[in-house]
Image (cartoon, rainbow, N blue to C red; front, side):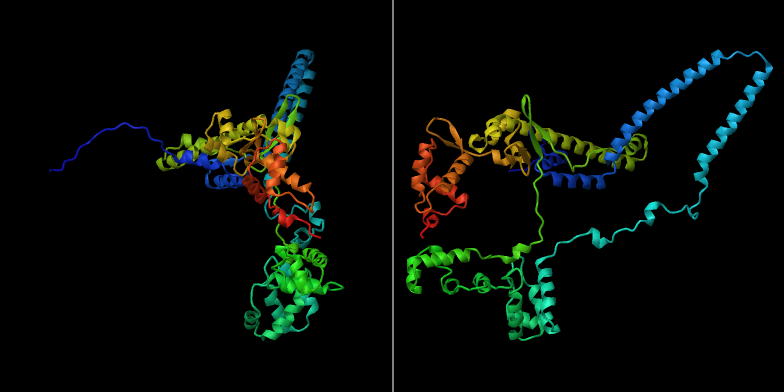
Length: 503
């Protein structure tokens, strides 16, 4: 069978993701800070883009006012001069002479004024123009204006230098401190520290005991048992039962088999429960009390405001640079005749225009999604979590006539400020639980009901999962026991056997 080549034409529809479309899609899930960083990078990379500063906006407004005032004053001056000329009557030659003298004096005055204005052009760079009043003010040092919170290692080193006198012990202590993690636990064995510091293991253990008594108490421990023991021994009146429980029964306390532990220690179960309450007061991760990590505050992207007509939203665009096309490069693109320059500027111009359109499209999409959410959750905004309705992405997508994937992208890493608090936009999308009265209940509402139910239960006889099914049934919530177990675990609530107050 011979082989031959043929040329066929075929017409087909195919979805092609252009680079510009990919850029628009990538902007949708970005948080506000990520968008600001992306725009700043585009301003650096693309010369056609420029940022609109707040000072420029204020200057433009002021310039428009000045132009209006200058135009009005010029018009008034022109009218007054015309009236003055019309009212003048030339009777003698002496008047014309005096008028010419006045005009010459006026010309001389204007020339002097012009020369005074142009004096700045004659100043040289090497001429001393004097100092301003601000130069004579004493400026604060950089240490007074820049503050750094001390870390756990810095705090321990400060105490080490105040406590230890020997240089060798300071070297050993420094090696120990810099190997303590943020939670306060030591990362290296004493033998490894001894090799690193050029000392023996006994010297390392002696310095380690000193560091373990620093504040926060328990730092430098190698395990949870050692950390709790250090804190228990530091009490003014150490409890032998507490020390015995930490030393030998720490793993068995979780099972809450107090009668068996009490029998082995020859004491009463009530005493075991009392000692356990003391152990719970200790800090299992003492280093976190001096953590230098800052708090990340949530800044909402959408703010809900209440008006006379109902609820409305306002977009929070603070921190996102406002951009525009640079007029100089636009003129250069129109007037240049060099091929390479024109191709470069044309590419950058199209990229800049598409970025501005993509940012505007992202803003409009967030606005539409926010409006749709508050329209469907108006009862929640008025009355709280108990009136939250179940809602999925398709509900919003059908309302704003967009695809579900677009709604999913635009609600990622976005927050909304409501009268009930600040929530992530994803918070409003959840499944529903059927009720006995026919409608659906929000799964978040059911979790809130379970949490409230456990908060109101009798500690000596807590509700089991089967009992909570019956209680929720009386509240019109149709829910299975395995679903309650699932929600209870998501809320980090232990089972009834571990919630029960024994003594």
